[in-house]
Image 1 (cartoon, rainbow, N blue to C red):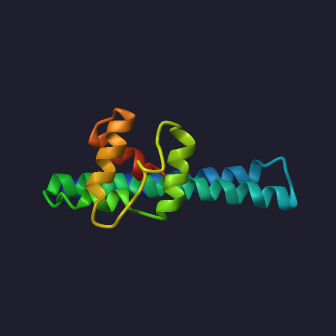
Image 2 (cartoon, helix red, strand yellow):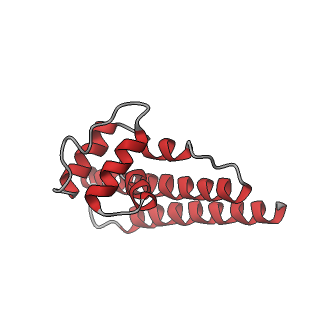
Length: 136
């Protein structure tokens, strides 16, 4: 078990080092200057941060599943991160078939929300959870 944690830690550190090296290389090789470079760097950092958050979340969920710590309540935690209004807006933008009624969220009725989205999109529960957790 300790070797697995050590290996996972090494993978995480290598990923972070790779992201850092890419950002530094981008700054050094950037053909732009001044404000344009700063804006570009900020966009890159924001995207790297979002990508890292997704990877860390997946990594920790995987560790929880392997250690048997995951519970049925983890679904709601995955789904409800961030602002529901932002997630709902992205869903409406990406999936025309979803109605306002399909996306109505009431605290404590997360399973009903998942069921409505699942039925409307024709996806499995795991696919809907993954879809929702990737939206920010």
